[in-house]
Image: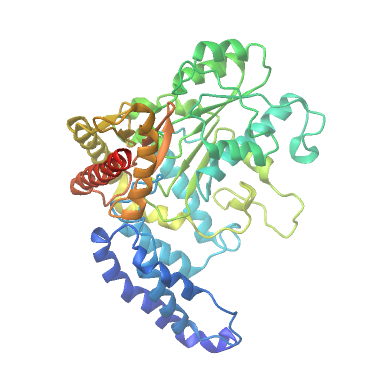
Length: 482
């Protein structure tokens, strides 16, 4: 085929292949295994030597569909409970196709007023959805990891100015270490952000009051008295059991000591949508920066995240590039979003979020959150009713932390049994749920955030866990007796 200019007449037909494949795939998705190992060999068909002239768009896309449809992990289906992964709602998924169709350079308003205006609208809508003050600045990111980095980079700029240093221009040389405090709930993505910012992944003080990692607020208050300007990180939704830091109390402490409060609300910020859970994020509107994901509970396609900063000018001071005279100056909603985060090249990632919020509104997203709350409570009841399952933490939001604990298995063998059970769940693939370590023991921690998930999916999770667990326990007994 050679030069893509020769292929331009096939562009619509290549897109049509995807559109025609979409219907059957989406219709089958609720009944598909999460991953079908029988098709894993197809991945080898992606390999081979680099083509010289190529086969053209239609042939290449047809081959990608032949391999991808059966070999993909069906993480957008209703029984992917591993990690914290939402699906893509119909409106968001279709809008993501629009993103590729229009192919906007979304980082500079001059290159795409559409992308710039859509991002400004989406950020305003999201602040209304979460109950954040309208004056906050914001930017869309690839996910909560980058959103955490944005918030903490702004915190670093603020902190350095307390020492009379412009860290953007002059760097960290000559500055002391920036004190960072958090509970034991601190997520690895926040540590990664500190690592990238040169602040030290392991340089975090964690005054906790128990082995679950809950924050000792009184100890935090005492330590801040001698710390000087400092940064606090609050977690809205701990990844193993879904618990929350006391954000309102942390905001009080931060105000008392003149500290910066950053909140990692990757998924837990969505508690604000329901009156049943809004108390969990009380105080988040007093934070200096807030991070969250869109490809979790918003069910937007990957990649999607957002960062909000109380001092909107600090975003531009931290990430602006005054050394590029060809870029136009921003004006009102004509914002150069590539000056508000580390990313310069950006797709128009606001469009799927815009479509989702326009399609389902506040009520639709609240209904989804509350349906998932009902599902985790149902799962908790099924665990409580099962003699071989043990709930390990109170159910706060959407994560259920439990383990398989059949009668007759010694405590010192339960960790190994549950670790093998997690591996068996992934291999079996009727449902996906992984293991973690919570309060020193190996546990399962399914997360329910997918818009497709319903009661039969949750019930199947319990059935499969007990079935596979019993099979592993029998093997253990057979091995022990032999």
